[in-house]
Every structure is written in structure tokens, then in C-alpha cells.
Image (cartoon, rainbow, N blue to C red):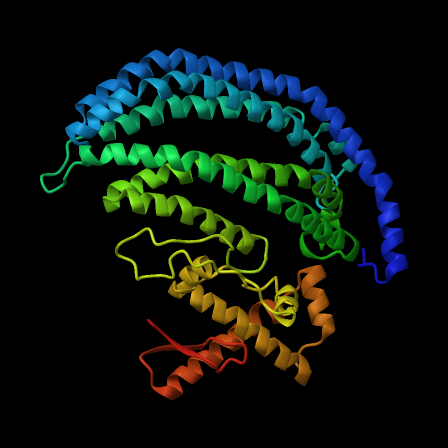
Length: 442
């Protein structure tokens, strides 16, 4: 099936695709409604029985191992023993709630997705597999989920506890906690939790419409233009399914941000203990909002930076600009240039620069850029043509682009390094290939 070209061809491809997609979607929904109760009952009853049945052993053995462990200082052991009842009592409740949610999601969506997978190119007798796939395999998978949960609760848990009470080496120091810092940690946590949870959730909600509509826009473009994840014919039915399920992905991202905000806020207590300063803990509670906002901008390809303040919360780091607000207000040309290169690495400075300092990442980044530059040169000189690119993208025949082009780029790097008599490989990092030279020593 060729990729449609032109508005009329894309419109006709979309219209002719609708009946096919709707039929598969309705069939998948019916299969999900039939299989879901069985899977939900199996997962919920099985996991709940395991969690409740082993709860007395988990409760007693956890207290015994913590009290006996020599890896924890005596003050930390007392604090852990005093704080254990609440999580141990809530453990069966969370296990049951998680089993209900997981069983429902798996039992409903697994048959739905299997219905679309049944129309793949390598599947024979597609009509039969559209009805049969995802029924027995989903029920069997639910039994596997219960078995894995049982293995975790019965084998893995006791293995972790054995490590906790194992003998420590003579040169190994137990984990210590300074008791006089605990009130400050608790105070900062009490202040940070409502502030961070509220503001981080607000940031996630504020950016969720952009994530929703930009995701829909990209999925519709891939569906009509047959690009991205829907390049192959077999992947086209998943385009409509992804468009319908994309709001659930956005909702899951917002929910994940809400849940992670509690952990980010509680980490302010760790900062207080490590730095022995309540002020540093409060500074972290403020700075983590800016960090979350900047990473969210990075993931959504928005303007880098954050409008929230980021005070310094570590004594060992270099002095920063403190409470100075970094407003990413670029000019119109900069914004247009950013939009045109969103698929490139244009993320936040903190995350991207930390990743780019890692040598293997530098080498891979150089290889991709080198292949891009050499590919343009070879295309201009006629060594490759549009037919080679089309064969690689559509048919998967990538001998020239997937093998010869990277080999040619590496060969040029080796020749350049040999001529320069350097102790390592010279790689060029820049849009022109000669702006900045780095040395990747072997």
C-alpha cells in the first residue's frame, strides 16, 4: 500500500479507513466487556488472597528483621519500628485496590489491542484471529499476574529481608540518622507537602491541554501522512486507537505528576538532614517546582527554562543566581526556530547538559549528526537518491542508509583522527561539523 499524496488522496484514505477501524473497535470493545469480568475476578481474588494470607507473616517478620538488622543505627531502627504499623496495615488495602485497577485495565484493553494486532501482515486467517485473539491469552495472562505477585510476596520479600539481617562487613558503617535533625525534617516536610503537591499538580494541569492537542495533532498528521509510528500499513489501525486512547495517556501523566509530587516534597526532609539546614530544605521545596516545570517543558518541546524561582539548596554547589526568575522570553525568530527543530535535542539545560556530558551519548550524538551531514552530501552528489530513501522507509531495505552511510561516517572519523595523530577519536560537535572539537579518548 503506497503512501497517499495530496489532500484528496489523504481525505479518501481517511474516509475509507473509518469503517474498517470502527468495526475492529466495536469488536474489541465487545471482547473486552466479555473477558474483563473474568480477568478482574481472577486478579482481584488471587492477589487479595495472597496479600491477606501472607499479611501476618509479613507483619511479624518485618518487625523482627528491622529490630535485628545491624545495617541500621539504633536510633534509625527505633524510628522505623515506630513508623511501620501504618504502611503494614495499609499494604493489603493498596494491594486490593491495585489489583482491581490493574485487573480491569488489563482485562479490558488487552483484548482490544489484540483485535487490532490480528490484522497484521504476518497473520493468516485474519477474520478468525480478530475474534479469537486476546480471549484465552488474556485469561492466561491474568493467572500469570497472580503467580508473579505470589512469587514476589513469598520469595522476593523474604529474600530482601534476609539481606537486611545479613552480617555486615567490619569496614561497613550502619546507616545513621542524627536525632536532633529530625524535628527540622518533619517541619519542612509538613510545609513542603501542601505547597509542592498543589503547585506541581497545577503545573501539570496547566500543561495537559497542550499535551492533549499537540499529541492529537501529531497523531492525525501521522495517520494522514503515514509517518512516524504509522509508517507501515500494519500500523495504520493503531492510529485511530492511539487517537482515542491519547486522553487516557494525558490523564495518566497528570495522575503520575500528582503522585510523584508527594515524593518530591518528602525529599525536602532528606535535604534538611543532609545539609543540616532548615533553610536549605525550604529552598529545595521551592526549587523542585522549577525543576519539574523545566523537565515538563523539555518533554513537551516547549521553551526551555522555567518562570519559577530556583534557589540554591546545596552547600557544595557553585553559587547560582538564587531567587532570580529565569523567564524564557525569546524573540519571535528564536521561537520559530525552536518550533522548526522540536524533533531535535532542544530540551532543558539541566537535563540535556547532564546527559550530553556522558561520553557514549556524545559519540552517538556525533554519529547521528555525521550521518545526517554525509547523507546530504551523498544525496547532492548522486550517490544515493530518493528511491533509496523510500525503500528504506517503506520496505525496510536500508543497506545503503543503515549500513554504508554509518560506516562511511566512522571511516572519515578514523582517517581524521589518524591524520591528527591524536590519542583518541576526534569527533566534531556542531551544526557545521567543525565548530567544536571534542576528544573521546579510548
